[in-house]
Length: 260
Image (cartoon, rainbow, N blue to C red; front, side, top):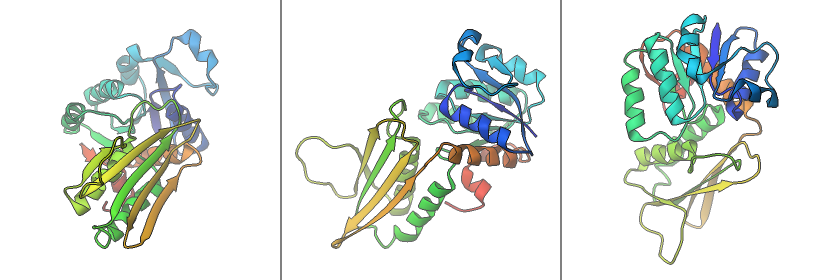
């Protein structure tokens, strides 16, 4: 199976390329970059990787033997790649975060033409955290809840897509929760308030913590990614899975065959 990868020089693009090379069952059709060819030598791109410029993406995708596309870039770029994939009936796996509602709506419309699998996080550990939330949120629905996430100092969107997905998952279970993005000033904690806090430091790959506190006790769910390969592995598994699906909107939970 042949996979095209966008964002060659990005952190997740590099991790995804490394994961595909590590496996025997998949190969790289080609990769893309918005960098000029003269700049690519500054990056540790493995030998033999075919890198095309984003401007030539649609033509290159049409000429290639790509069975599926994996994208970790920016919302604007992801839409462009998805539109091209839809023109050529090629499934796409998207791990980009920071989409607006309007951009999500456009992606959703494209999923009527091709399979689109979106996830803010491709970690099996995070999926397990969501399952744990399912198990305890009913019992702890009246406890105070806080979400904290830490990422590397170059991450653009804040809070992380994973932190927002955790909040949205909590809101489905407990309902009518009110997010507070950091705190400043003097005010008491509001009813059903959930603090969402973002930290950006060093080269942290991703840490998320959910605190349930009340009744003189605290329950803390923590996930820490030691390497971006955690996410790349899940994305490649998703690419293999979605290559055999009909057009529609899918999530990582479909790959794992769990309901979250």
